[in-house]
Length: 311
Image (cartoon, rainbow, N blue to C red; front, side, top):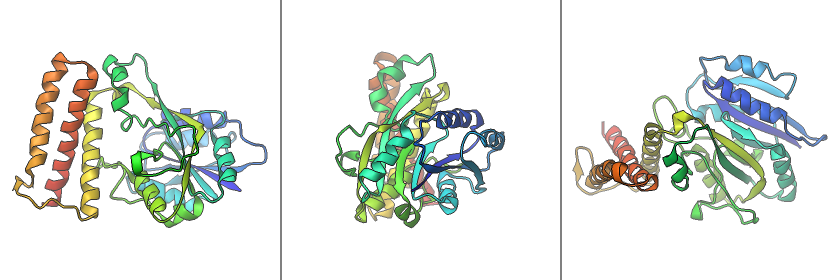
């Protein structure tokens, strides 16, 4: 069995160094054959130098993808990787010592499975904003926090029992058959996400099965730049745009009256959400106003998608 650990990176050289350090410190089974494929998505920083610095510590190689966007980079990894399984993580993650070994054990335990997912917890840069700490239950998506439980209950879109992009694995046959949609995934022109969920859901809907791997644990590093209202607004707006995109793909277009190129409910949700956010930001604790910020921002993303589709 050959395992490919895949990382796509853009302009995060020092964060990538931290991730590769954690990979180099893993407890890897002696008989495991593995490779680390790092796709440089046209980074302007010293990413290549960081990758090269690990040549004597990891079975690593650098690949290059000139087209910007997470899905283009992921698809490049698929084209060049040799593994029987793809284990995906991100360039802002620290893996635990037993991370890869836990996945290898799961592959042997469930040879019929195509999808696997581990847990992700946040590692905040100190000091942590008080409202962030109080609101973590609302920030699972933007901070990529996921706990799929300790029981071998099959993964499913129902109840959102799906892994997140910083910590999941796919069997090679299914991964090569189901590529990442360039219309999804962060890029210079879009904040839509969900490229990994799209692939995972298509695999499961095609008859594939998946299981959680609770011992495959990572930490997602949350710097101060993500502990901001600005970051959360951009993230939730991208989620709204993503939801509108999926509705259009499924033919679930709204047929009611439009106001300035978008359904009236979108405008109402955005205005109400913004007003409630501004009011509660002054008088209420973090979890209250963060919830309204989410409503406002998602409506903003839906609005952006509708207006772009009609221009």
